[in-house]
Length: 287
Image 1 (tube, rainbow, N blue to C red):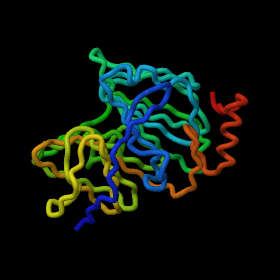
Image 2: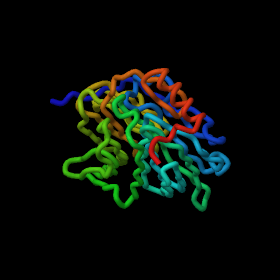
Image 3: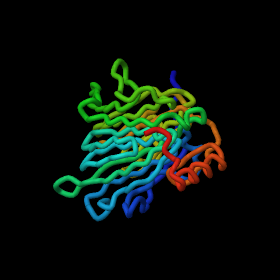
Image 4: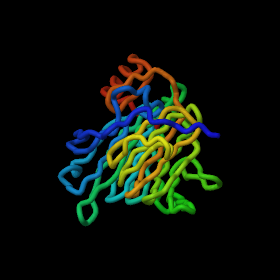
C-alpha cells in the first residue's frame, strides 16, 4: 500500500507590492527556502482591476534561477536581453532559465473586461548549472495536453507525465511536475508522486480536503497552499464544492542559498560579484 502524504503546513497567500507597483499575493518566498527546496517563490497575480497590475515589471536582472509564468486570463508581454519577444495568453506558459544572467521585462495586459489572472513560480538551479546559458521557452495552450479521468477529474500536464501522457516541458534539472487539476464536487483524486521530492498544492478555485477520507484535515480554499510531508501519494477529495489546484513537485537540491531579490546564488561572494557585474555592465554573458 502506498504511503499517503500528510499535510506538513498550510500557507495563506499574503498581499504584496512588486515590480513598478503591482499588487499581488505572495504564496511563499524569501523565508525558509529549505522548506520548498528546489522552489524559491510563488506569486499569485490575479486581479480584475488594471490599476493592480498595469505598471508591470520593467527591465530587471535574474541569475541562477528559472522563472515559470502560467497565465489563465489576460496576456503578459515579454522581452529580454537575448532578443526574445513574445506574448503569453490564457493557458500559455513561459519557462525562462536565467542561468548566467538575463535582463528582461514582463508587462501584464488585462482582457477586455480588465481581468489579468496568472501565477509565477521561481525554481532554483544547482551550483554546477547556475552559470548555464540562458534559454527561453514559450509553450502555447494548444501544446499542453489535458487528460480527463473517468470520475470527471481534468488534468493539464505542463511538466511531468500522467500514464502515457507527457507534458511539453522537459530537460529541467529539478525534474519538476506541474499539473493544473480540476476535481468536481463529491469526487476523490489520488496521484502518485516521487518519494523524497518536495510536493505542494495551491488552490486557485473552490475548496477541498488533502488527506484520506478517514482523516479529514482542515479544508483548504482558494489562495491557500498545502505543503506535504514525504510519501508516495497525494490524495484530495471534495464535498459540496469543486476544487482547482496547481500540483507541483521537484527534486530538492539541498545546497546553500544566497539570495538577494532577483538573483540567487550559493554564496554571498557569488551574490556580490553578480551585483557588481550588473552595475559595471558585464552581467550578461551570452547575447
